[in-house]
Length: 189
Image 1 (tube, rainbow, N blue to C red):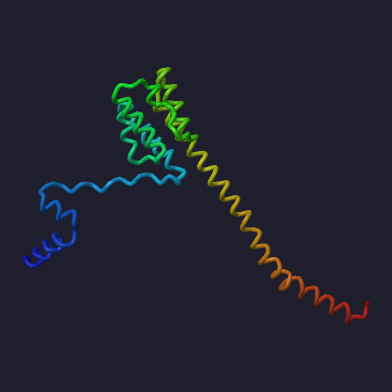
Image 2 (tube, one colour):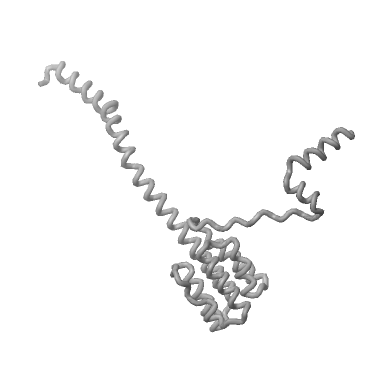
């Protein structure tokens, strides 16, 4: 039994760096850094808006919710959210904090308009962000569906070029040749 315990202790010290670090420092290892969203992912913007809406629905303040969304947001959205969170935390006017960025983006502009309108009218920002996320998710689904339909049309051309000659050579030509042979041998012509 003591040999098994000794082998287990050696394996833990040699094999697993986080465990080794925790054993040597006496405190838990730091979690791995979060991976930022892929800017080419069509659903990344909608999922970041879902995170922001969930934070707001849970009762977080707008600057805290925006700052919590930054690590997983696409780069364009992360920059806008970080700027707005910093300015709002410093006490800036919401119209200034949610102003347009240097590089206009259709998705970001819609969020900024919604946030400015919410700050001016006092409407719930979380519900509007939820609806905006649903709209972007539907747009991404429509774009994926259209790309799939376009791919099916583009695939049909080469398949037709490959299978049509084979069908003619293997299906139609033998039947026509057989019929022509029967017609010519019968003496009708």
